[in-house]
Length: 615
Image (tube, rainbow, N blue to C red; front, side):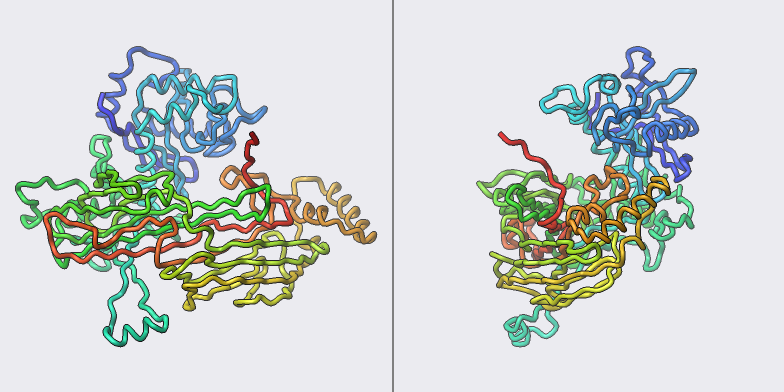
């Protein structure tokens, strides 16, 4: 049986759980029927119609509590045969449905579930019947969870199914199309000097440099200026449901990107360009070369190659001996190769071991080989326009760009004293430059009345529910040195009883609590732990989408941008990039590092963290 990824069917449901679009692939369904050796009550032998699928989806929502489901086994709510019975959060994204037909419930799995805006996308990839039977047995297993070392758990089953990954990519691509979020990766190039020579030398010596500019993601054969791309609605229009789903655009994308149910090229820009412009005699490739699917048109014009590394730094800083700080980097290398013909580009990627790559993946056009202890050789036949050459997860080789601590102590019911002590760019040297740095102290459940305090560096502004500290403002970068900054102060909140969040408890119980609180205030017995619990009570139930329920804790969030080099130390030497057949094309390399969830947890309060096993 052929390997790879094949899709049996695709469904799109609206917010009323009605199927608004569906597509089935008879060729793949014929393979599924041929794979069945015998009839089984647990195996749904044919694709359900739209109404059957919608009914099954609504039944699952009622059974599992929501579209995604519980994800974990819950007493008195999860039952044998349901997804949550497996007790694995992945079942919130890879779901099953029971299709009722002829008084029998038949299992339909694996369905990739992806929610975008008002729409729910379900993609059913082809798997062998033995895998479906294995999942059916997992749904009835009496033990709970995916135990470490278990050979027959859900993870070991999914790792055998590469079609799952392909189905996720299809679901995300369709989601981008129906919500209008089809964008190409950003590639940055330094702007050319406007005067040059002595002027550039003088401005460079006093710290003024030209800012990098993003390269437009247009391709050689693109839509006319101002022409609307079919099927692309603005985010606002989808948000309010003012524009219907463009089924023609979806049909065009699906039929072109996955003919007969087999994904070939999920790049919507390529597909749209082919539909809008077609082909001419000048678009024919050289007779002795095979043109890849990811490059439907040949580039003509000024030749150049641009590489940009985008990294996002995530951190959880605790400043506690018993809890280690966590810093991670997610990055991608974007590329734009404006080269005529069908050349091959090869380059050595340095810093691979220094970065301690945990996960890495490459574009299908690339081939990778090891070239020494700390290098990888990458050779690729570039697509047209901007594309992601590589994605990776790595460690921060230079240490945290912002370190230190944040402390908040409630000195009374409506007043808190805080202290920041931070160090920026410690151990970082030129050309690394921090373009801006901002710290935000959010209080989503309290309204700020006043703030008293002056930072050692920067400016402070407040809103109803947050304090913003601009340490390094935009336009005044920090390069070649580290600085230490402090910010002590007090923040006063509006009285708590005027902004209480209603709870599901009875009015009588609330009145009793109010009377108890008045007695506590009258006695003037201020207990900090009691005050913190009072601030955080009546929180909504925790959701798996945000398992730490951040509003229950005090934290500060850091935002920054760093240019000059990657923090993982992954880099490209433009002089080492080679092109075959040889052409004269300049090669440029740029980096950009931004903060993701960069969190300073309150050292004096409670904080979520992953428990470590003591040996």
